[in-house]
Image (cartoon, rainbow, N blue to C red):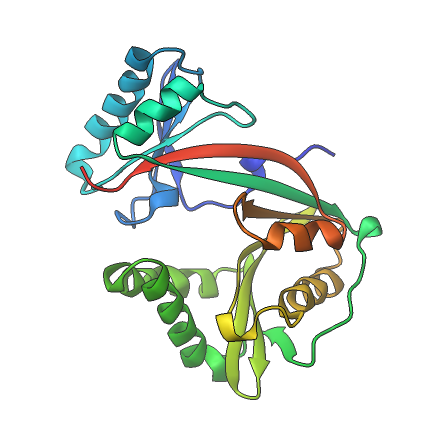
Length: 251
């Protein structure tokens, strides 16, 4: 069975489509980078063509309160070095995402950590929200951290999104979203507190999800620059696709 980035969960909806591009928007979030962007349906081969996409994205979101420009290339399509240099000169950062796939018959089950892993219980809700708030502040800023609390509540209420947590006693030290579809599940936002890394907790969370959900297929997205991608490969995941994004946060 073939999977692609199109199978990955997103809050964004397609709101405009032309022969050249698709614009995705998350109406409830003006700060959500991953939910407000323009997908280039045709690979640009010149700066003029690239500028057309940049202007189209800027013009659509200008009156929507979205203060950034976010472009997505097609899957497995790389822009030329000339265009990448131009984007860098224009203060765009490049994000390279990898799509990993696991058929559970290929899963190499690791030794479990000494910590407890379970689905989020009501008693841990406040601790979980504080844990996520701290992550968001460190990764971005307080404005996003406050905003994301509302999105987290939506995830918790969703029938198809489950929260797995790792705990040291009552302290939450790791978490992931498990997004369940008919024939696969996706592991999203896998995060381990820095002081608890390299202790097998991420593998423990993945193992718990696989044993609990009992789906044949598993997907996850990793940043190409992140060390954990090697951990995924060591337990049986394989890279099946990649996609590049270009983000300008100050306009």
